[in-house]
Amino acid sequence: MPDLTLFHTAEVHVASFDALAPQAQLAHVVRPDWLTRAQTGMTAELRLEISAAIEATSGPVLCSCTTIGAVAEAAGATRIDWPMMQRAAEIGGPVMMAYCLDSTRAPSTALLERAFAERGSAAEIRTLPLPRLWHHFTNGDSALFHAEIASQVETSLALAADTSCVVLAQASMAGAKDLLLHRTVLPVLASPAIAMETLLPLRS
Picture 1 (cartoon, rainbow, N blue to C red):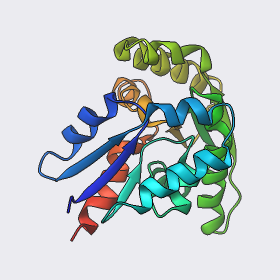
Picture 2: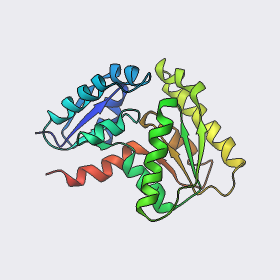
Picture 3: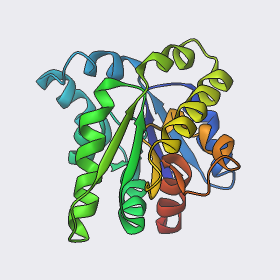
Picture 4: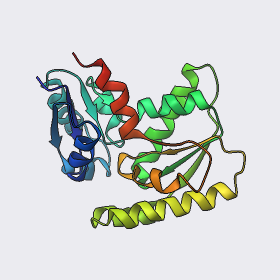
């Protein structure tokens, strides 16, 4: 049995997560069609398909796609962004939440609000929508994708001096974190590393 089974909607995530946990036994399931279908609405058929695939696995499961995260969680998976949202709630608000897919906004906002609510406080969220950058990722130009995200976050932070931390809502955005290390003193949170740190110590 693998230490962790990961469900992705983009092939590029396989190498990224393997690099984060080189000593772990990871099993990857890649279903880009799930994201394509979910972007036009989560149908009952798609919900059942995702749930059945997750329930058929053995051991802990991580879903790296924010858009299908709620369905995956209901089927027993850990959402990639949940440990990150908990970390953001520990830091406190206001939180700047950047995202590049419109279908990410609602589930990410709800999850961040949930993390704050579990700590007995209300979330103050400043959303930074960056949908115009998504085509860089789908075209395979990750370097430009991450560079543009970092630039937009830096510009937005200059206009919101009281921000407590930055949340990069999608796993695909994680590469922008390193680019921001020397541009801001604020914590910049990316979900893949935080999720792996949280889950792998729990493996049997």
